[in-house]
Image (cartoon, rainbow, N blue to C red):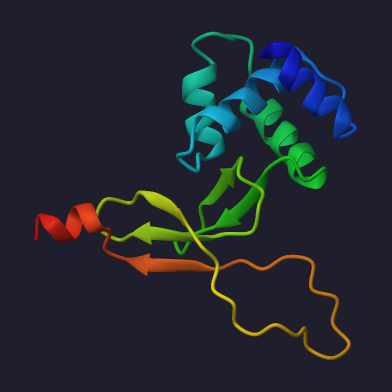
Length: 134
């Protein structure tokens, strides 16, 4: 998998390093919409020299190159997502889990004169699992 991730990073114009490969691997294998702190807690176990600054800088680079996306929830927390295809998010107000959901089609035409490059939609409510226990 390391060679696959290394190749993927090179295709995105990113020079692979141990830290970048491991952060990208984490993003591809953890569909939990992690924060910098979440990634640090997990990866610092196997890479003790890893810093939050390195994670933040790597995620910024990965976002700039289109390898991951970032979004901010209602509590001003930035989350990262390895799924870069268009989709919306749903955050459960009870358990805090964030889910990928299909993005709604608001309409099929861009507003006149605007070059829309990104659309962010986040729903807030109660997830099916939490609704089941209410």
